[in-house]
Length: 258
Image (cartoon, rainbow, N blue to C red; front, side):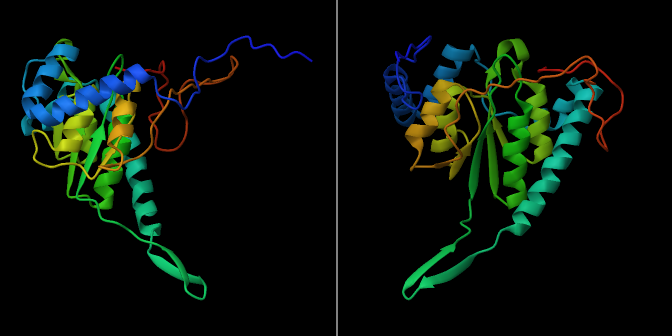
């Protein structure tokens, strides 16, 4: 029986595009050599941002004022659930060792992290969930310094206010207006903060994913994230408004981003 491929990928799905790999390597090398000046240059080249890179404490604390009340309420609701789960998850972890056979000892160790770098993408939409998930869990775990990197753009006046509010709510210590490879590199190399990250987490485009892959070993990472494909199957009887306990009950059109 002859097998026919209607569509065939040009390369294995787990193989990095060589051009992407080379470009990311060049950018990371430039960032390590040029430091903050190179990060500033790349922010201007890729995002058109020429303003301050680090968000001030005042702007971080007051970002929620620029958001609709419904968005502020939604972020508070999500953060409360993420926080409560993270506390239980943290308390469930314990070190142990067991001798499986004479001389063969296995176990689990809890390794402290001093600095966590959390990347929050903000291309078409502000990915506030990435800020809540990354920062909240690090804060609950007791990480000393949690640094966020997210693209700053002129049309938004810097980092998106929803991301700033989510990061502040979740307990971020510093926020850098840097996206892409320059954002990941700044977290890993400690640019603008003097705090090189022990671990860098968060999703992003192919350049971000490749930057994390290339830096793995020098820093810890969560995963090399790929594209997300989601589909909701529902008929006309389905309600667009969640109805579980604690959720605002007013029905409204679902949002994909702000």
